[in-house]
Image (cartoon, rainbow, N blue to C red; front, side):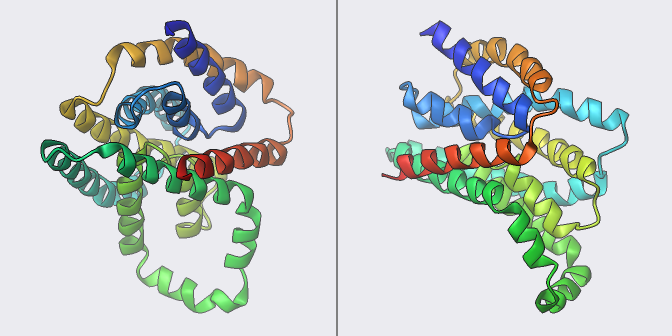
Length: 259
């Protein structure tokens, strides 16, 4: 089974390298389907994400493609809600409640939302640019900071309960809240926010005992070369096709977990 975890990490790493998203979206369902308890799958994947995304932050910071003010605003919403979710999970566990149905349902919802964002991103962007949303855009300009904090709060809940959403959902929210943000800065800012969020949420799960450290090491051993290979293979491949294929896969996974 140790080899299966390494192989799974390698395959997920290739997908992440190809598409730039899909770490938690694929890793957590994979771990559940091979028999890892949902809470342990989420907790382990959160620390896995924190470690792997840290390298991305360093690279983006060197290119000055991180909007740190937006990162701080997102964190003002996500970090407190993440801590509250960890406290809630701890309370439920001490009360004898079964966390598996709660976490599985959260994963399912997050997967379906992520899939819809990947599949319909262009449609959502065109709809947001329509004149009928002029009033919404005016409201957004006035309350952009508050809306960014609220967006962070939503991400904090979803990511802590499911380990899914820090990538594709976070990027979609950044595009909606900051339509003039360059694409490379969307990626850099999204990753920069995901690192503290997943690190704090993962540390909370570690405190709750829902992190398998040995499993984490196996996943890292497999994923790092997978990400490097995927990045090389992804050069020249149609981004739309890869994104839609990943979105379709995540949609099926989300529905499968909901059944």
